[in-house]
Image (spheres, rainbow, N blue to C red):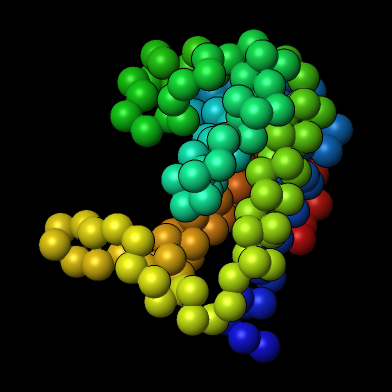
Amino acid sequence: MDAVAVLHDMLTRPFEVCRQVLDGISTDDLNAHLADGTNSIAWLLWHTGREADVQLAALTSAPEVWIEQSFHARLGLPAEGFGLGQSAEEAAGIRIDDPEVLDDYLAAVEDEMAAYLRGLDAADLDDVIDEYDGQPITRGVRLVSIIDDAAQHAGQAAFIRGALGWDAPRP
């Protein structure tokens, strides 16, 4: 298995967890906060899609799925922003009343990322695309970072679903 195939396999895993978390969830539980100042499942999964979407758009110079497919309008949320630097109050303002539309958004982002990965070969992963603290960032490092962030947030959402008393299926 080559590196691109590994990344593609890794990509599917957090998005599968997202689907499982959303399966049959009530709107109240989707938007519940375990304690003041904590994120809801809605925020975590919205952010999972947004962070991947924003970073993929930067890699491809293509429009964000969020805007291009009008998911912001369909979910009644702002077109801009993806959660980075939000205050607890701003994060609490991310409320989603239709888990199916959120699921559709996550699936659309996963599809775009998978299509992007299919267009790469192993040598493309070594391309330097950015710099952070004076260090080069390669395309491969950026993709791992995107997938890792998605996995962390999907896992947090699954934890909250369990804490709310749902018998969340395991991947």
